[in-house]
Image (cartoon, rainbow, N blue to C red; front, side):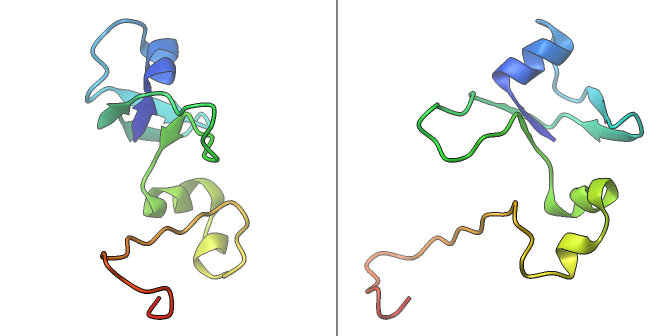
Length: 88
């Protein structure tokens, strides 16, 4: 998992957190693999940590893998430039 700077400080203090393990929901261990700056207030994203999509299956089950309408997911695509909107 990747933690924001403020969450890393909250959970681990001022120690080096890389490689440390954080327990989620009292049962799942996630290794800290990165730290990123806190999300700015003007962002539409609001999170304290990021985990791989497949690791989330352990937390919430397979529902999101079998449903196109899972409400808490965003999908982004990087479009090469120049590309016209009609091509997209």
